Image 1 (tube, rainbow, N blue to C red):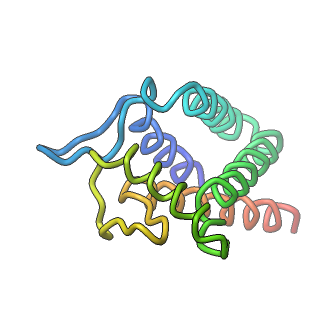
Image 2: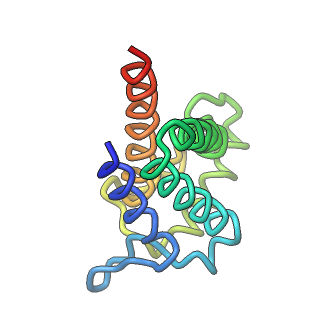
Image 3: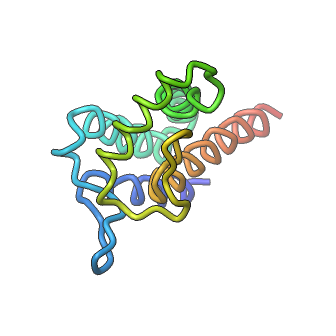
Length: 143
């Protein structure tokens, strides 16, 4: 299980450093995004190291971190898939599309529904998988 968190930490590090292949920007540097990414990166790195060396403590730190991340991402991004206030959704989608216009989109952005760019889709899936993995680890370790 350690390898999953270490690989995920490496992928999330791309948020801090930025990542591009040729003309395609997959992740901007954290300076553009603000301090939230850097703080989360530090917490994630610390929790991963603690999990590797002290799994009983690290598992709870990672569980809390991944739960908060998934909860936050739902309310910052995916809740707009369920909101019926079309004007509010259009404003949010317009702002998101403008901010991430320079990044690569595997699914073409739309004006009526928020479609995350490719890197965010991968990131959200990765953290959801990590959340499930931590929950499975906790329950199987308890047996």
